[in-house]
Length: 312
Image 1 (cartoon, rainbow, N blue to C red):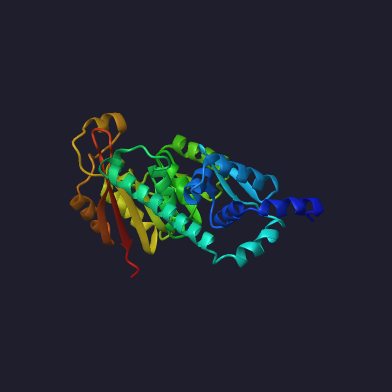
Image 2: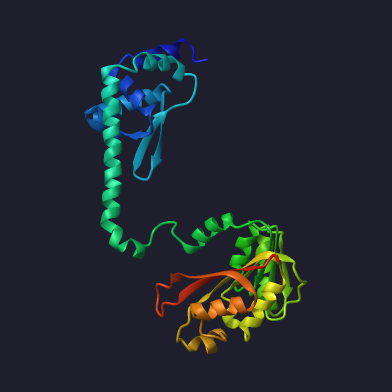
């Protein structure tokens, strides 16, 4: 209940054409004081006075967004007192003119956005932008991955393993390093992830049963294998018929220091060599593409390859 005093104050607040026009505009969308000034073609002090009164009687609320204050219609019973007025006058010349002004404002916003992106298009890929990270993109895209049983062969820092756990029924993480596996288990426990199990073993001789997984992932692991062909054959062995392999690795390069400093056994793979390895391991429908180039020297290029184990 609003009460007689509250109702009287509301009626006085509504007894002004400009305030009704403000309410009508705010019923369309959130607007700032400067937006209302532009549409109504009135000064700042006048708009501020009207907004303050409408806020005082509970018809309008506001919120901060950066340096701007955005105003909107307040929820609650007070809306019923002016809703009928707006409905009755929806075809009035004043309301129609305000809607035209609002559409002009929207057009200008769209034009400003288009002009900005036109201006920065040539350098956009080099800019540091909020929220644009490879991890964020990977986490989003991995939501499209099929549910099922995953095996992550050579886990590295375990980040991909935990991403896979978001969509998988279960993930088996295999690595030759017990310390890597221990750290993964600790991180999984900390995050409350319960569908990851760890297995210590060589990806070239997996201590896993045949036909046990739907997807096998080798992310930056194949160049660590002494015999990449054997690692891929093992990946195929543990896949169910129709299962898929995902290989993420480096395009062939000449940075020999990675063998000594990072324990790489191979300096990446050409597309044709990786394709031959997958086909030789018995995978079908092999697809390979260049995915990304490191922005920092020596600008390693990443390959992404997929293959399917025949369902026959």
